Amino acid sequence: MRAALLSAALALGLAQAVLVTPALATPVVAEVKVSIGPDLAKKADTIGTREFDLLTTDLKRSIERKLLPRPGGGTLALVIEDAKPNRPTAQQMSRTPGLSMESFGVGGARISGVYVAPGGARTPIDYSWYESDIRQARHGATWSDAETAFDKLAVRLSKDQFGPR
Image (spheres, rainbow, N blue to C red):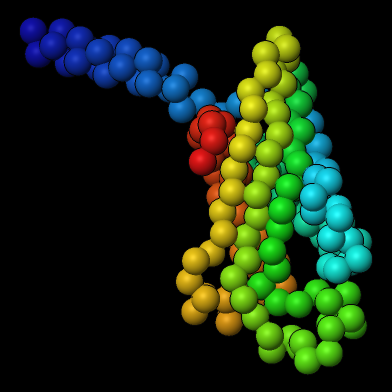
């Protein structure tokens, strides 16, 4: 009798786990594409085009680390719409007297995009995160807060939380 009750309890527990798992499933991604949005691209003369390569590479790396791309998945196309550095970029320091690597401020990033599932279903992505406490900025590198935004987005996507935030 105890064995039957234990078996029933285990079966019920497994059934519940199976029902909960799909809601928390990580989307299957085969390819991650990252680009710079038009508003951020307009700042090329100010922050430097070299920074765009750093940002796109970091966002792609953050996403791929969490989602682990594999064959048969969908395509995740992301656009960095805005990014604010914590410290001046090389371009900003060369163009603005008085700036140095000792200068700092709050930063962050705004990302949009779309996930296209293998069947063609499209899910929009809209995410932004900006630091609000300047006390955190003193210890960061040039793009620390933007990198934090990228990592936070990657975590949300890995939990299938695609909606706006």
